Image (cartoon, rainbow, N blue to C red; front, side):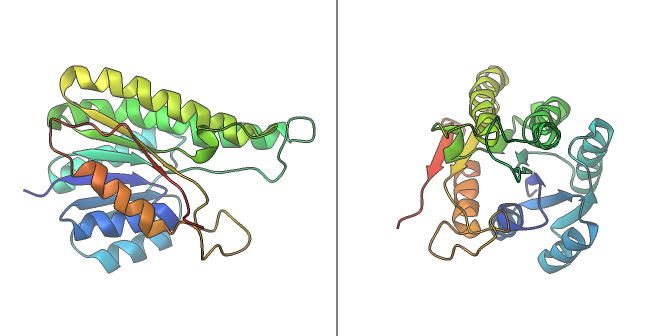
Length: 223
């Protein structure tokens, strides 16, 4: 029976590319995002191996429901990928907008916590895998960047979760790219990392034998 991967932030960019790559590698994929039209179109493109689930990742009941629907459709939840994330218009501390910070912290910090909490009972059944999108910004220091601080949380959380999951045979991986050519930026970045490059890293982490746990994959543009 094919394994199943649930992806948040699956409507575009890294999430959509990872869904396609995982499906090509033989996985079932549950596509979670608020953009119903986009994930339904992506699910139609992928075919029977895909399930579109409208989900706000900051709402615990919707996250739990998405996991239940995934297990009901495919029989198991073997991996989850906490990919949903957001930034802010106004960088810096002094000139930043605390309301923007709150929204970003809910998506970048609270949502991965909620997903891990709700997914653990499902992943324990399969000795499953939790992946999360980190960033170069979570490995380095950026002047006054609250976004960077949220990604520092992601990297620390990923390591802590990996230590907890290994007690029952599970694994956790932080996928940490530098600049990726996605809608996160106002201008296209054709010479930078492509979403498909990150998707390849996701599939690589998922494909490792049970004796190996890839804790972090750090990807930088080659220009």
